[in-house]
Image (tube, rainbow, N blue to C red; front, side, top):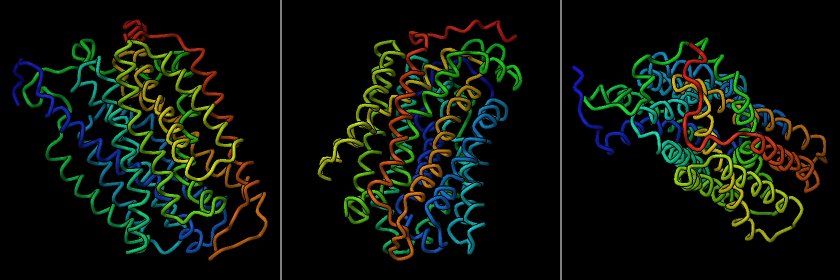
Length: 434
């Protein structure tokens, strides 16, 4: 389409373009959290212990984390439309392999492919946000992306539990694969990388419009050379991985085995955590945008997350009180959203995709390490109890594993503490990588 200098496009169009990739992020989050609900079925079908189940679930995280930097570079190089379409197709294939594969190795392959494919969604959402939305709404839009994602996590709670009861875990998971194929077709037909493709003015940074994005090498060099990038890299992973690990795998078994809840009740509690995590993104992002501060709200969020995990571990509460407590943990953990906007502002505007992938790699990377490590700790305290082929762990075993959730968030406080405030402005020297 011939470019015509016009006004900025309507917001509904911006949300529609961005929303297509946000739907992929939603589906990816569903796949990320699903093992918590089908943990017993997986342990029974494949004869798994805690460590092997943790590895199977974490295979998603391994491939997701490894793909973060390549995803950022690809988003800059081939553009969101092509990348998102390829990702939807690859994810759909992986879901079907995982759902209907007859062996554990096929299940591993399916999870690996799903993780590697949906890995592009978050980075691509941020890439699109930089072109379709004003810069002063970046944290807010990123927060809405978290809302989309966690809606997928909520669907992987009670709705998936009901679906598994009605259809079995394989059919329930297979349906998500066919839905993702449909999204691939829609994305290819409708998505455009920039408002200019529809004849509107772009919100992209002037340096990007004039010079384009940085090549892969200089982009990575620029991102990796910033001290604050590394601090935000570790802060994001250490503060958020505990939520992903608890809600995504070990939360439901813990609540059923220690508190004696049925699976639907346990899934409802972990879904409350994810729901709070979801809504905190746009709220905390908007507060940060309004205050024009990144460090202080992020630091306050990580401090409160640490305090709430401390209460969870050391105060024995009635199960009804777990709803507000886990909701509070989910809400304060959503301060992660501020970290992405923060990291963007301390880096070159032509490396948006690279910095998004770099920081997000830690979020999933720490979770990938933590899931099987916690599984090993649980196995080391297992007393030999089996129910329907699934291992049952005691309260002491879970405490020994979950103490690392508290240590992780405490370390994130230290990381944020040493960052330098950006005041919601790009403060990088545009010439330092050219």
